[in-house]
Image (cartoon, rainbow, N blue to C red; front, side):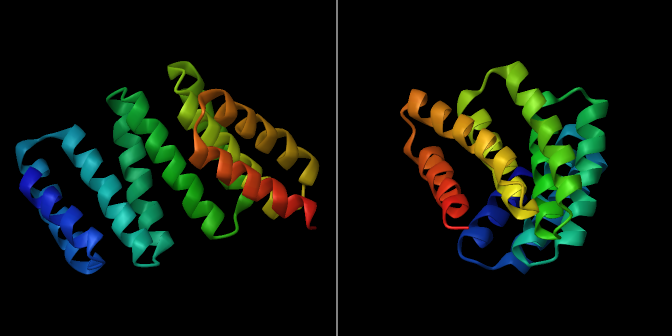
Length: 173
């Protein structure tokens, strides 16, 4: 199964998403045969990412939701947070912003328990982006400024750039 996942990563990096998907599906079959629920959930997340890259957000969403269910059953909080984030992104892609926010806030709640400040900065930025899409610039400013402050405190450029980019979007409206 691990070999198939590694092969899938190679295919993903060279942009061959259908072959990446096939390798992840083979890994899923192996995890199922072994009765490995954690491996199954990881494969489901990977399959969802492959479908997202192939511009099939509804199929991606189905796999992310299956993974979320397993992550909840096995009490895998980091895995649950990842699944929630991926689900939120699919709803955002489909312009279902209220649903995206619901999943982002649950994602953020888990991150705050783990105190992963970098991930929190990124999640706050994601919330701000959705509020921009909703046209609620006041709320967007709150979350984007929190993201910017965390990124500055951490000395992390990438989340800072994302927050500043989204803040700029508001100011040019």
